[in-house]
Length: 510
Image 1 (cartoon, rainbow, N blue to C red):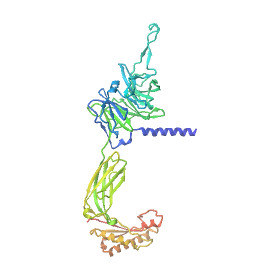
Image 2 (image 1 turned 45 degrees about the horizontal axis):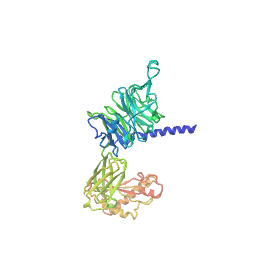
Image 3 (image 1 turned 60 degrees about the vertical axis):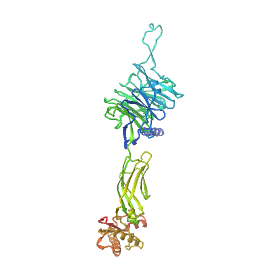
Image 4 (image 1 turned 90 degrees about the vertical axis):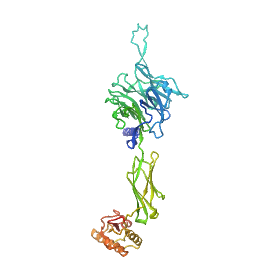
């Protein structure tokens, strides 16, 4: 019994996951605009349907058109009028069955009857439309008395309007719209029939009051048998709704949010590999049009680019900020200067993004560089460039000298660092400097304060010996209050905390 419960829970979870996977791609939530397609005219583009060979079918003022999806699925290529489908009598949505090579559509038979038909593609041509045989709806017995009919009870055709079919269940179920079948919810409802055998379909089943209302529901589209999209005019304006499948039934339908719905009529929607297309009146004065999500152009800019003289190593660097809009979430961001120094950064990144190109080996008179930056992604590419100025920002970075445990004597290897530090400090003749001593976490605060002060004084004495004015140096003892490595576990880590840092107090950049 426990195993069965676990199995049921897993099936329910799987159903939820599939539902999420089947939904419209979340990428359209940002970085995309819902745009009117170029193929739209002053007439009414309507009745969009999936068709063969990566195509979409639609109608425009009584004519049938086919248009191929672009590779990025954000638009439709130049539509071509299809006279073969017009000759069949197509006047509404078409349900295309790729496996069977069939299409299902409705044909007007009389003022009171519009029936569902099928046609099969054979030798490159569509066969003559064949009327679907639907249980309980083909014919009914006449009302004349037995004697009046000379012993015969004649059959008469059922009067019914069935429109805008949509395929589901691998071609074994057809959804459609009807306002004439008995026991509906009022107005037009969504119904479905299931294929029982070749040429025979089950009696119509109402989709139910989780979807149908007293208003008109129309234009069903079923995505992966997990989501039902449709339209309803419950509030005097036609809007788009969706319902999720669970436990073999459609759950309560919900109104789709902007931008799928607008302040005017939005009629129908279909989804191709997560990419939605819809028909709407939102092009004021232009009738109904087809809309698709188009990616906003990637935009990139370089700001605050500077040439910086680095303290460590005595080289140069280029720093700056990159701002971007509608950037890709995959791929890389590349930054390069014309000397060949380059860096790449994995997307996604926050905008603005600060970068630094290190170790530029060059003379000061050649520091005017062109910095280039670009995105690299299959769906987005944008480039920008900036000429880095020759003026050098002489930043002063701190440096630390390490000490042995419980000692305040400079190590011999500090001599090279000391010479480089003095050289850099001399580039700031009007600046003052803070010389801060530190200790590791072992010992009391009082003892370490004194020890760290002695270490700072040792560095100060060395600087004075090399020509730095003592009035430009300020001693600070920080003890163990600002550890470089918290909770040091070994001697190498403790050594990082036994240091002296030299910082500029008032840099003038001169």
